[in-house]
Length: 214
Image (cartoon, rainbow, N blue to C red; front, side):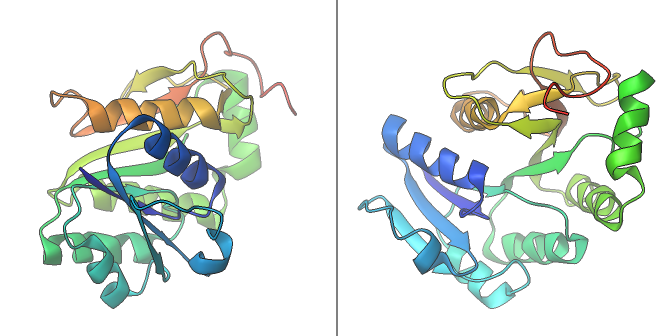
């Protein structure tokens, strides 16, 4: 299997690349701005690196040749998301996993929902996330959206709980390590249970008024 990580120099992108290399025989294409300097510590025959941004359809198209799964690490630019979709269709890649954020459907209730809206609800970036998610859902691609709650790092904490679209989303936090575990579980799934789904991603037993680190 060939996996393209768009935004590979981000924290989750780097963790995902390391886990894929450690646990699978899959080949990786790592795509990021200033990729050669930011990803120079990765040395593997399983890896190709592309330097570009999400609006560069020529470089995106080249990077997608032979790819089975595209992971988008950031959908905070809806114009870029549309260009990624265009590039995928041009090359014929169908499978995409996109990292979005909680609240794009106004699905977070209670005190946490009010806190989350205060923090990010009215931002231009949130509006871009909403448009990006809609574009992915309407794309005709075999998509999985991940609506990530507030992120933190904790080594070896890979516990996650998922919430389906239409259900209240109450988990206030989740580790990046758990998000990576879920992405790998999705990639390695032998059935189609994750396709066409928008999943709220949180940590079990974190239904609080706000994340513990705030």
